[in-house]
Image (cartoon, rainbow, N blue to C red; front, side, top):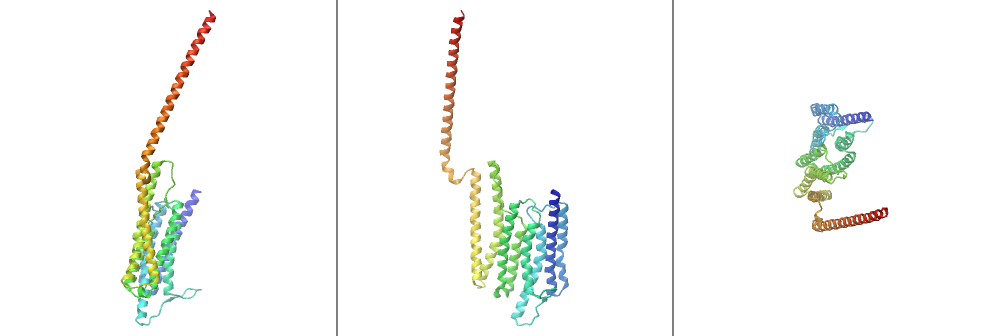
Length: 348
């Protein structure tokens, strides 16, 4: 069974890296078609690193993924993200040319057996499949030190994160944002920055409570530290940049609509809840280090007095038992002596 599990894990690892490479090749192919320049195929060079990383993981590390960092996902992002940048900038050029009333023939890619797909649809598909591939790829990759519970929680976190990132990309649908090249570049930069969190494997799953109190406190403190890192990473890489961008387009560029206001309020609320969660974790950590709850500190003298009273009662009970035993033994000895004298007199 162990050998079969290793074979399945190896097949999953190979399939995942093949999917990463295929998606990157499709994205770069679209860049070469839209730019009408085959020199952009040099963007496919990270595939060599992906092959080397796959061989190293399968041979040297014996199909065990890295503990905190996922290099295959990092290489995959380095393969696809530059292509998406070029495609989005190509879309901006098309919009600016249409705004300037310059006739430009939009590229359509014919696919055998399917209708012609326009440029916007190709870019949207590549971006959507990027998030889907990241989630499915993390699921297929070997768990490493992660348990099944931790992996399931990590995948659910990835789904929520991917939904927020896709919503952030809806900023391109606004005409004012789409025609401002500075805002497009800023959006792409923040989007790329938010994708870094997929390369870090952190999970806030708490381990089961053990029988030993010391082991329980140490494991809880460790889990809290992991959860704190995950929350801070989420704020720095996603929620804070998203909030700053939306405040910028509302305050400076005066782009005020329902979606911007809603997502601004949403990011603000998420950051406040995460800060509150950090505060709760800090309280839990202080309670664990003190050995008892903060709210029970005033009751400690009462519990100590009760313990002392119980000890006194136990000592008194032990004293009474000893007295009773000595009295019983003395009475038994006296009765035995009397019986011996009587028996001795009868013998005489």
